[in-house]
Amino acid sequence: MRILRARYRSTEDFLDQYLSSFDTGGVFFPTRDVMPLGEYLLVDLRLPNLRDQLLIRGMIAWSRPGRRNK
View 1 (tube, rainbow, N blue to C red):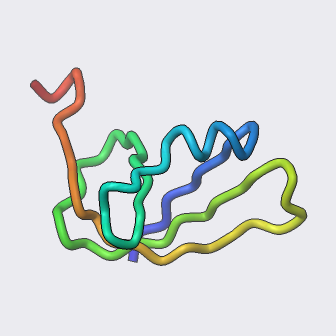
View 2 (tube, rainbow, N blue to C red):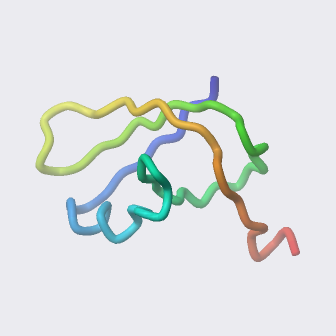
């Protein structure tokens, strides 16, 4: 299982990336790797106002080609 590390400067920065269009919510993470739809992963989420990191289990539900992959 792949692990993505997400660091946000503030809770507001995280909420700006939050996608409510999915039934259970979601977050878009730009990566350099192509990740297949349906792949499960862990997100190591860190916010400055939390003492400990959060590990969130998720699944790739949507992707788009990057600028260099077109």
